[in-house]
Length: 342
Ligand SMILES: Cc1cc2nc3c(=O)[nH]c(=O)nc-3n(C[C@H](O)[C@H](O)[C@H](O)COP(=O)(O)OP(=O)(O)OC[C@H]3O[C@@H](n4cnc5c(N)ncnc54)[C@H](O)[C@@H]3O)c2cc1C
Image (cartoon, rainbow, N blue to C red):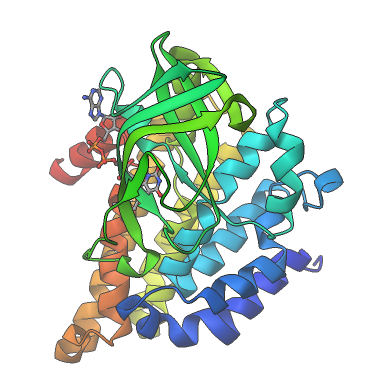
């Protein structure tokens, strides 16, 4: 057996020593800055960043395992830090000058980034419009969901231009002329992750802030492939729920989890991203099914006391609801609803 990757070891230590012991408390309040300080220090924010920028350029299997570990320990903390990986990957694939300005600082955890782009998937509806203004870009519209407000330093913001291009640019994650945030939303789960909506009313960003510009069609075709696969966080949360069950109850669910996970990851590693889309979606949907069964079983097994807000089983069941809509697209929603009504 080979030794685990150092970032897997670090994620496990953070999960066991810090995240899991405080997860119920965090769930009822907000992700503490001290949790994020440990994440920044751990090197996990550089998982996907190139080595020459101070990152780990970790293999996909390591990225998935660390996500499982963090999400199973404290879904709110996992969710705040997972936003950071999209900006890192965007910069890693960018040739724009902003790459050299920010990638190293994001890779080492000096800066923590959030991202606001799910709304671009609603195209041809354009919740955020980008227009040229002077030597930069102006953003107008509403971002319905932005996680980590007040916790992260920078924000990768996406909108659509008049030429039907998707444009991503970095801004400072704080109120400024043209950018106003709602109060953090009170949600059924992950209130602790400080999710807000953002009102953009002429937010101006210089051209040097732009990280990505691409025709919408081309961007959407690549983005679609990212939302077909099962989310490792779903497997991590399911494992956490299984620890609350006795072995006889857990065993069949554990077997289902292992099979769905093995097949999902085999497709991710063994086939080109555009191959087998229907099977990927079916596995994504089956992963939700196992998670729902495991979290529900944890509530049933725990009885009345699971209704206490300090109880782990109900927290996991609420977080499972959230994971079922996070990153949901029209396509994945249809696949999930079809499976639920079959
Ligand atoms: C607590 C929370 C925090 C979140 N934080 C973030 C964040 O930090 N950053 C971020 O980018 N996102 C964030 N999201 C968004 C999240 O990923 C989306 O919830 C998810 O993608 C589903 O989006 P929705 O429910 O808003 O969209 P819905 O309106 O339900 O749309 C779902 C899908 O339907 C399709 N669709 C919708 N409207 C149209 C239309 N008019 N025409 C064509 N197709 C359409 C699109 O494929 C779309 O993706 C967060 C969500 C939640 C619940």
